[in-house]
Length: 205
Length: 205
Image (cartoon, rainbow over all chains, first blue to last red; front, side):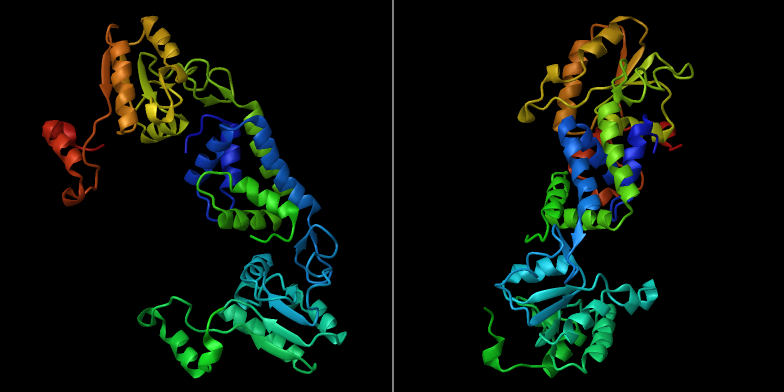
């Protein structure tokens, strides 16, 4: 692109570093910012710098937090005997949005992926073992993506956790609510037949 | 969304103000920034603030520029007798990328759009008339979008410019190179038949 301004070119280059943002989208976003008041652009920029510089991670569950211990880990209303293991903060938000879980979380910070060079030592696994070994935990359940990386992580953690007295479970896999049978892939359909549940347990809500 | 951090929520809200960026995309982009070094986030933010605070607009053509007069307007290699009228800086970049134009530009800063409350007084029209009235301009051509707003703007400017001794033209409209005839809409096809050109003039390059 032929930029008429180095400042513009630089701003577009910074935006285009973001995932899924190409040069044309970056230019559109930068020109939008250029049309805003100076205060608004300043507050946009400040929000990013402040987030990056001041963010904390909960010392217990490793979720993003403003305090050393997050709201969920410090809440007396939550059941601290059940830990839901998730990949990142987005998954905490997804599970929280269901209103179906009142326990606490453990954020791994990724999934085991030899292809991407991510091994168990790169994830918050030792601190999970330590939490469990304190003995107050009755149940651990995995809410990880149904991918090769998710399954590998569950397999590894299950081995590390099976010597503790724990109920270990994973979120159910099967056809989604509203899903039409003819469009479901055969692995999902096959597994959901093999793991079929009593009718009474299958009702939503 | 249930955010575990006010800082995170604030950064996502700022990103979600950008056009075409919803809350989920905003969260993904913010979490990406959170994974970068502090220096990189600082340089991202600085680029935006610096652009907004230090950007200039060329006093002749009103294009975005780092200097009071832009590189194109101050270049002795350009033909200052031909003005290409465009909506914004993106269109300058698009025309420059073709390598087919060696004149100078005039950036209107928008198009006449009564629906959006944009009238002639909101655009850089008086300065265009002033440039033309100095008498050195031989040709003015419109490179505006083929929309209702583009056509309205051309109609208005043509009326204001027709008393000057000028060649006034617009970029050609017709089917795009590589376009398949059966998929061309009937207005474009009809007009491209009505304005058909001698074969020798139609070859690309």
